[in-house]
Image (tube, rainbow, N blue to C red; front, side):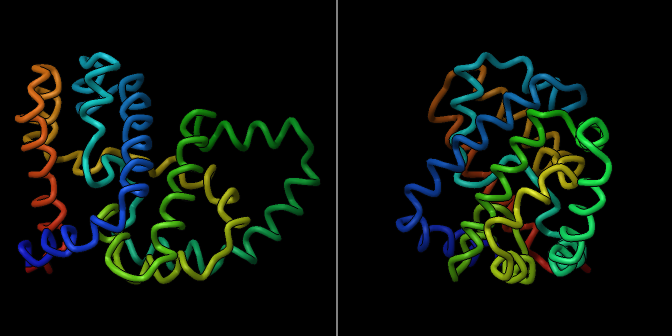
Length: 212
């Protein structure tokens, strides 16, 4: 299963030069966000310089996560998006500007919401094409990718503020991976860093394996 996953990534990677470049930019933005926060991964990332974070960001997969493996979450969110958006828009219009600002603040700061907006647009773009790209790059389940394909671009901004609270580091519970990634970035050992980055594909493959 893991070999098939990595093999699938290799087969599709030649189609994804632009997509991978955009992903690297998103990874870099995410690491910059993480460096300003607290917690295990944030503490490790904050020890990196800007140049070291840029180097660490060059992974062929997302370093961030928005519950992309949670089919139930995204099915409920995306199937109800149209009716939710209409009702929410009417309520917000009645509340006025001050209450709109309060609502946005309760879901996340401006930088986080802005990043999530870009990440969701990227996810929608990747999921809009057939194949394994969404699974390979984002760890997105096939069912979630289908749901993303059913929504339109102008529906994405409504999701950003409410999904910002779900933004996290991918494999945040795997300290071995993040220790290795940040240590290699600090040493500015490009070969070692690349090895760690490619080892992340094994974590991505393991996440695709069925549970016991």
